[in-house]
Length: 340
Ligand SMILES: [Zn+2]
Ligand SMILES: [Zn+2]
Image 1 (tube, rainbow, N blue to C red):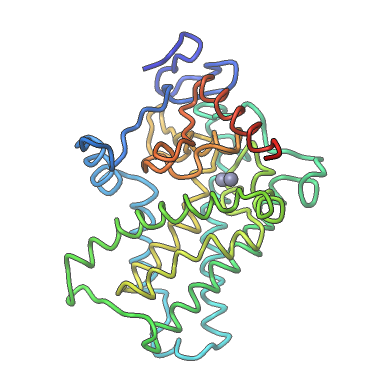
Image 2: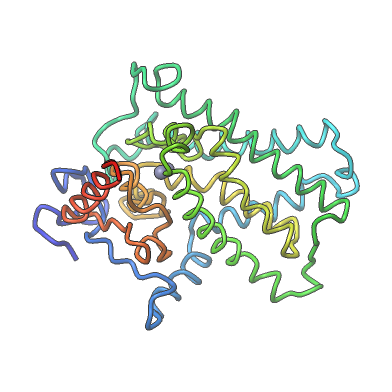
């Protein structure tokens, strides 16, 4: 449902522009129901539980990848009892290669080979070059540097600490045979937890002293690309990956933790791709981008959480993509900047 003619969406696979502000955007206002609506929205529950798991989505890819990594790549638990260079380097190499394949692959597809042109691309601009705001004066090199050095570094360090703790019995383990129902439920629980954690740490990162020190680096990217996903300051990585702590409290299997960290480490690459979907022969094949988070990168003080969770609606920071919502956010920013 479009709110005006200028915002009317184009047909599936069509070319923009569709509005003055965007090259392409989904139907506005964003009205996606969430899991926690009252009275319950069965459509939202169905969408969240089934389409995310039974459809071809990034989450299903992370899930399959987590099982494959556990079966064929993860070192034996007994080998991880001591902090030794070999297996620790193997974990770092795994994450480095995976991020290069996912973020690098999306980048080459959309921005290198331009396989999709500008169809379903939110912003009109391209990645910035010769801009001294970025490290190396180049947005893609800047994003790759912070993602691969600091991002993969912290992601791997947390995984290493967890697998070492599990091997030594300092973190509670779980097998499918112990509790099959709980084993399966842990996957959606991990996603819910991750979304809740992200909302609150992200609000914390917008606290002016932390914003200036750390989060500003991620927000250099107003126009975002796949490599922008985990292009963050080391302090932000330190905070962002702390949600792995749930596995020190709630009994988990290595595959839960691998899935969780793929969701955290690789998930932002498609969601920051700048494209809403991957089109093959003009049909949407894989949902990627997240207009909800794209709005956060343009307007800053809104949409701190994720699109299918209600946190921003409940706490008054929801931007639904309309001009009215932009005015509301600008008013909030002015109020925040005014001395008390
Ligand atoms: Zn972001
Ligand atoms: Zn932010």
